[in-house]
Image (cartoon, rainbow, N blue to C red; front, side, top):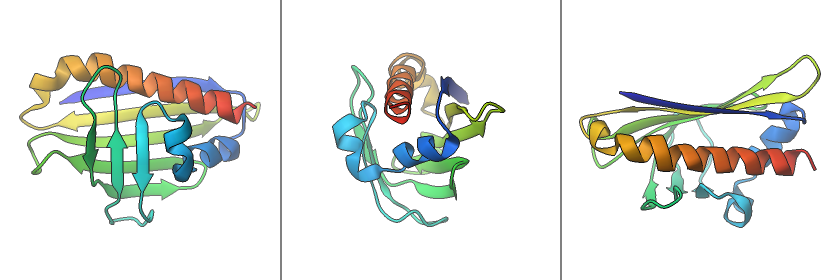
Length: 143
């Protein structure tokens, strides 16, 4: 198993950050990591995602939605081909701070027999993709 977590402090409310995070139709115009996200956000249902980590091969997949709690958490679990090969549980978590700002956490738990083969890509390219996306959400939410 491999776990990746990034955090960024955003001088905006969780409601504003959530608004940016869930404006899926505009992802292609601003999101440097998740190039598209389409489908209905219904727990237990699949939707479509296209990611393009920096300097790495992009991929499209159909994860299942695990959590979609406005202003708090957005989480899904996806797999490469079949369960147990290369699975990832992706989470966006918004923590409201006492001053009204937000700690934005983006993380993923990777599991499966192929994870060791991709650990360098996860630690470098995927981490960079998370960080770039976090920075863009911060920039847009703080405007």
